[in-house]
Image (tube, rainbow, N blue to C red; front, side, top):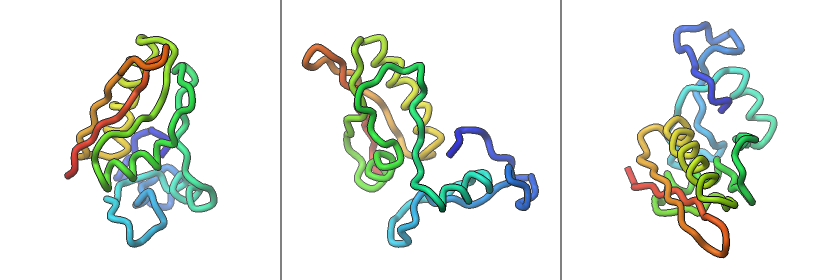
Length: 130
């Protein structure tokens, strides 16, 4: 959730220790579990999880990444996730998204596309089903 590595060997009583996270409270959802820091996972229970987009990226109307991850994992396909003012900004955003999703949804093959449209560049994620 915080994008920092989790040490599975740490004590589960330590705030930075491992905790099982399913990314959703919906028990009917078919979401693979993964490790998260205990403190991050506990905090998630009190508020809706939001993965922040880095300030260095120039994006307009960025999509909520947890929602995108859940949809791509469930259905596969293509999701438009951001608009950028230049091709360079869009490519940097696409590269960050592919890297971020490799950790957010391990095992789900995700690629990004950058397409011109309306004087801006659209960034989309494309995922196959497992």
